[in-house]
Image 1 (tube, rainbow, N blue to C red):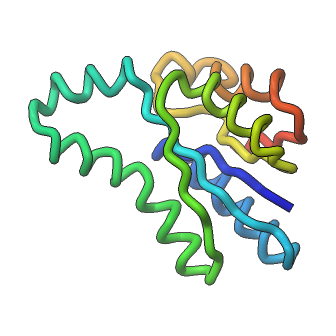
Image 2: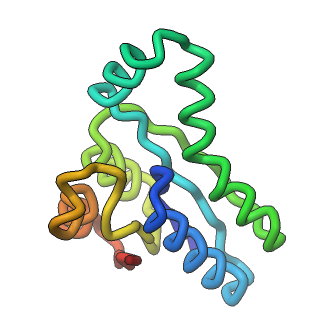
Length: 137
């Protein structure tokens, strides 16, 4: 069973990772994959703010590191997949193409607007992927 978790550095994403790790530990044949999408529009804003490519890479690593460290601390191996583009579109395309059997995603990401409602990424993804989706809040 291939279980994928979308991570973006948010608290909800980290809770999604915790849930995925629990599943993987109970399903011995399961494989865990972390999906991180570099949003081109957001990346441009980050680059303009940082004006430093190393700083931008460090910022991205800070979003990914908690998830990889949590898996490592629990003795769970996870494959990291970095996608580029619109987060919802890239997650949908990857999950459907790779025939992921279970997707786990946080209910809201880091976007301020998404604080008011179910995150637009999780909402779109939930409607368009071909596998069960667990939304963690």
